[in-house]
Length: 568
Picture: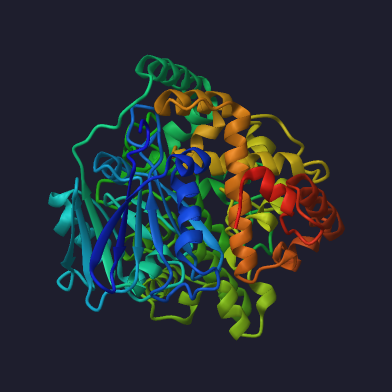
């Protein structure tokens, strides 16, 4: 096979056994890799009703046909599982260098099932797969764990949050790159899996090298010509969005009680750049380098962390935001859900938070010694204040307000993960004018565009490229890369059909897990005080269902499934 490695590894931690299977050609062509392989394997290996923290919930790591190649921004891989935070199917697009290591080890997918009786880590070197005791690593943070294992290869590990099964614990790979905000780290912790270390020596095989080089050159030119990628992300990282949002007075604050912040200058990318010396740490083969590392080893916060520990909790002190973000990183916990959960608690309790209290709270949450470690929805239900959880399907909304970027209202409500901005990044067309300009105040008529971005995101997450390529590359350019790499001729329409297939299979998983059309919803706060119209959202959802080929209850029709080749 070209593009794909043809190898799937299945590890049963309960029996400490390793088996392998060949990646089917049909599966490769119809699901591409990454996120697509993940949802297909979850359907093969898991009951959608499985308890996410039980030994029966698989954890899948998957590469794509572009992973590890010379294509720009191609060092990514996907992690897929049933989320302990949302109970939905949940994929995460992960950066760094771990994906390339997997691909060089000849791995299309790694499926981890069962639960070990002792802490272990998984070591993979080309064809050799070994389970090794991690008892000496249990209790260590991600920096300590990575330092202990990095001589063996690229490391993806959990911190104390994963060990304590914090519902939004994540993975950190290559000592810098976090992923899995749905609680993928907690799933690993429930399996006594501390880390995976991978090293490989096999170059990916490209079907049409000259065509691939031509497609790469075209992609590089487009990335360089696009101001969002070449002037925004490459200079400041995602933090450049702080001033954009604050200038428009739409930076949500105080648990979304306020629709503006008015203190963006204190935490802006420009302020960070002027105050702190950061070193760019690009993912494999990335021309942007949007992640910045400070001289003391701390990560410079991205937009989401700046929002979560700044406006979301009413904090204007940049030093405390940097320290809070670093606590999340070393313990392996998602800063968006961490900050948003603290914000809901602060509103419920009526408290204001000072810098010392913020850091102590983040530390307690990220080490699993706080009730807030369950996430905002679970915690607010316990407190009898469910309405204060700014979440959809249990996933906390990030710092993009659907009242002011209306396309996000539909994107959040219909996302298979919950309120995830990356399922369809509507800030692109509604704020940045990429790939087209849409009126951010109008929800009507956006169902088709949300569907398009959702399907395209599923493709990008499956081949696997960094999601930021969507600012500069369309489905045509992506089709050229995939076709040349694999030798399989894909048109733009072919790729979008694959994305649609993946989206529908995820929807079926969630429906079988107990979700219904009533879960395609937003917090009531989004419909009050000049927010979006609940009636308009319902109309948009109805139109979206029609465009998807679903019935009026949001269930894919038999004819739609047959059209996509989904057969049970």
